[in-house]
Image 1 (tube, rainbow, N blue to C red):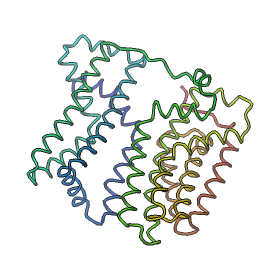
Image 2 (image 1 turned 90 degrees about the vertical axis):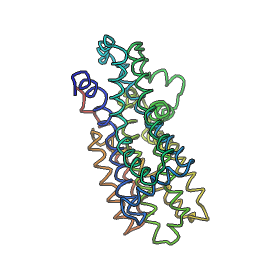
Image 3 (image 1 turned 30 degrees about the horizontal axis):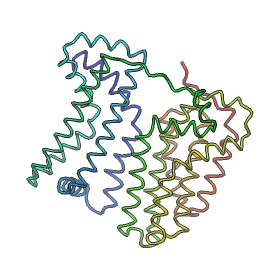
Image 4 (image 1 turned 60 degrees about the vertical axis):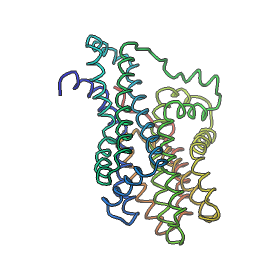
Length: 372
């Protein structure tokens, strides 16, 4: 790798994978360990049938294209945000290169960012060639090439016409949206919408397909559905963590305002209730044909209480993203043990109890320790 490529790799590729490592690990585990095992087929057979189904069904293929487009947009948004940082202004030296060379350099950057999809595309190529599905393969790789080439053009444009975007102003938000939880919701909508949408599509889609396929026809199979549901809720921990980071940077002043503990906790309760509305809707859709009302209610309360618990844990002490994800893994193991022993009712009651307890103990004692 030549020096210009190495610099761009360090500037854009490594931070992207470092920031999204938790999401990649979660998706990898679901695709190659959890889902494939639950399907009853071997790992190769499962993904082979998945690729053939994608190449044979136009609607399925378009859905996959849409998911890839969302991922590509996430990459572009990440790189564009870095371009606007003052410390990245030295990138303007690349304008001295020929335009074709600049496009080539950023094309390589986008290929690195799209590597998880491109690696899986090689397996799609293997499956398609084996079944002689040449036309769908042409569309697949043409689309992937466009997702790599067009962002490279955009990066070159940003390089030439760097525009500073004003940072999010918590004070101006507070003037327009007086409710604290509305400020946090605006942050999710503006900065985390793709992550939030991807998590909702994964969790709600998986729950709906499992339920419709009759996997939970017996009461003993409720635990299987809860495992998938719980995984989806825990994945929201990434959003919880980023909300807390946003608070500590832009809304630190709020902690000094004369607001009661109850109202502060209520603000978070409203916020995370709103963020879980898609899960609540999908559970309602499954009642009563595919899911009993009492079970759906317990699922909803478990998910809601878990999200509040994750938020309260962030007030105990400062955690890095890596440490926070480790804690979520421990919580998942504990919940699975509770599921097979005392049941869901005790589980969500304990989650609510510890969420309020951790919040009450840690709110004013919390202090970030990552400042330079």
